[in-house]
Length: 290
Image (tube, rainbow, N blue to C red):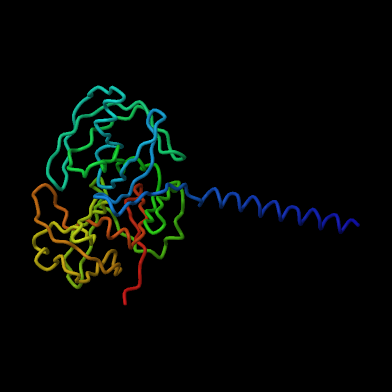
């Protein structure tokens, strides 16, 4: 009888320990997630997420190329909440230099993720949107700076992990160092058999649509002559790993950026990317190239 009692206590302890370990593991690795909205019939397909301002729902474009502000908002929102100018901000874009007015936004939230208070935001940069396709706001990369980020277009999800998360699951992905002295997703890589390093930028806001096909963007003229808008396959080499056969569109360069290639919508539709801003790394899922 005594042995039976000891056995029951021992089994109970094992169950308790296992349950506790499971809860710790679940709390440790389970990310928060945001649904990404895409609409490929529109001028700007996405990714979009839902946000709230003043209790009202709005649609915001997620732009990893925007590192200058947490959020940019439309003129309609500025007028609706009677926001007053609080300064000006100069930004460099692929289109050139823009000057945006700054405002103090009392609050906004990404539902289920984070509430923001007294955020210095900017007006949205001027752009020729198709009728009824202008987003309400643009979320910059810094809106997610408190987390490690997994961009998974194949699942239409943005996963946010606590920064203490040990990303063993991604250990076999290609690891690339971000430039330590730059704000944003700048990194070096190679193209095909060319050993010259080229400067890449991961930008959810980059895409070129040609005859219904989506391409990513090349700005550097020294490689533009080799990479055209044809369906020629391109192999990227990041961190010594062959990553993806991509389609690139060569466009005229400008003197406002030193980026050689912007990887955007087309690249992310085929490659999940894990972003660790704190450790200045990105990890890209490796696909077997035949």
